[in-house]
Amino acid sequence: MAPGAQNSFLQGSASGPCGSSTGLTACSGSCAFCHGTDGRTPPTLGRSFYPRVPDLSSAQVQAYSDAELFWIIKNGIHLSGMPGFGNIHSDEEIWDLVSYVRSLGAPSQR
Image (cartoon, rainbow, N blue to C red; front, side):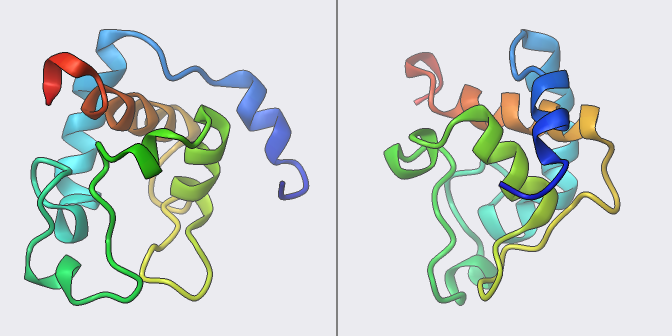
């Protein structure tokens, strides 16, 4: 875990329907370029990356803890196509994105 990141993890929460709808709005702008507008079907750009851009509803992504998803969205993944969004989204908006990613794994959304 990055230094100081634990404080952000403890202050946020990825629960509640409001987070999902707000996350959808943010995701349609930041995430859709690579993960697709539905978070499940990457467009041509997303399919061209190596490693592959994951389906956000997949078991691989859903296995991450909320704190791990927060850190990945905020900081990105070094040596992959996943950029960090901490410079353009507040911690609250990132928690909304985490909530949205979680909603994609919900059985009613599949």
